[in-house]
View 1: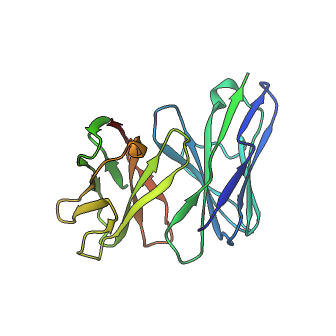
View 2: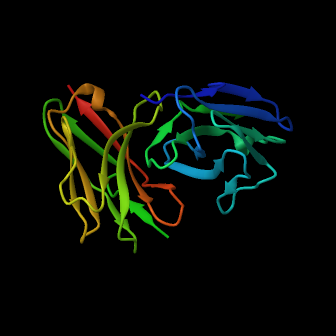
Length: 115
Length: 116
């Protein structure tokens, strides 16, 4: 089946620094990737949708300059949290979708802790 | 905007018994997809079952089945012969299929515990 990986699985960074999270589709080409944020014991909230080769579409209330998304190839999307603050600490999950199919394949998530 | 409501924050069931998780949604679309995802303690999202709105037949995947009532906008998940490994958060999700916006909208989730 379709496999999506995320790296790193856990990251701790200091306040004010930037951190990059990678999302890769391992055995298929993903025309669209999605980034979600999940707070403890809460549901997934969509942050942005990224299509290969074009700018990401951010959901209302998500700061574009803080959460930089790059979808440079059909197998890789990155989320960079810039100038991280403790309130950015969360679980970040990506998913990938094949063109013309509706199923999304989810990565295992990345736990970000900002100290 | 579409909304998905899961009215049961937590549920428990004895091993080998049957449990039903409820989900309602609100949309003006005529065609869409509905999903149930499982998130075990590992936090990996796993697709349990999918229903296409234009199909009247309820989807079934082994021990998992849905009761899809389109007019009532209801999409419940039935788990038969519950197993300890079914313990997880279960999220109901909606996806519209028109307008190029195939985004998933999730409910708040139901925490299911299967007791031995």
